[in-house]
Length: 106
Image 1 (spheres, rainbow, N blue to C red):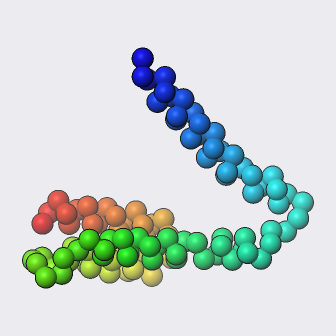
Image 2 (image 1 turned 90 degrees about the vertical axis):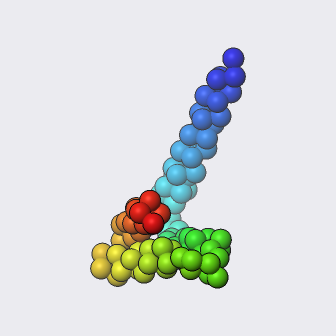
């Protein structure tokens, strides 16, 4: 059957994910990580948030109703969540849930 290919693909993806997650801990167990790794660790979440904002705004037609209102309100709500809680996961998940609510509502 074709299901064994799906299971094999899932197993390979899980192994690759596990290896990439464990590798930094094994590699830097006895030494301090280089400055570039610390820089990426510190700045990665804001970069991802910026990419998500541009991705969200990229497909909006601001010349037709509702003029991107759902997206703009969701971005403002997400910024509010991040300002209030300072947690990227709360901001991303809360903003996404709020946006999905607006999409279903309007």
